[in-house]
Length: 141
Image (cartoon, rainbow, N blue to C red; front, side):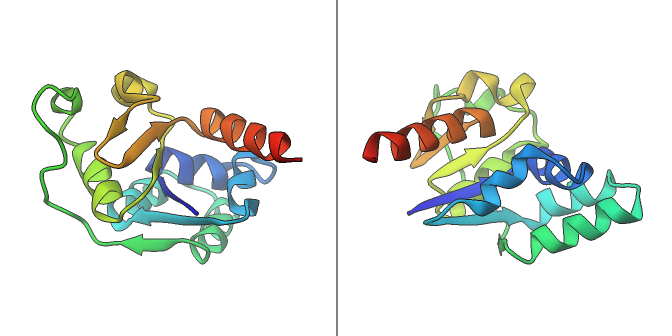
């Protein structure tokens, strides 16, 4: 089973529009969705409309919130040291929450890690993850 840690931008985008394609993540089978209070609060701050906030709250009911982690989550030379300090808590919570995947839309900061593993966590955009996941399920048929 995959354990997906969702970055704040994914949470925000899923709630922003009523027909957001990212909500397909919540429909996947054999997946647990997790995030952190840090990511949740960042997403919540940026949702201004009541309908967005209501969608956000509905989506959050299906997510397990993992504790923040201060653990060092990387080895020198892994590329993680170039992340801005605001993104380190996201990665640390994903690793500490035992996610198999960190899904982020932040290609500016996480782009150099996309498709790579940090510890046991693979970093993908939602599009990459869904293409891989749906491709695998199509092959199984």
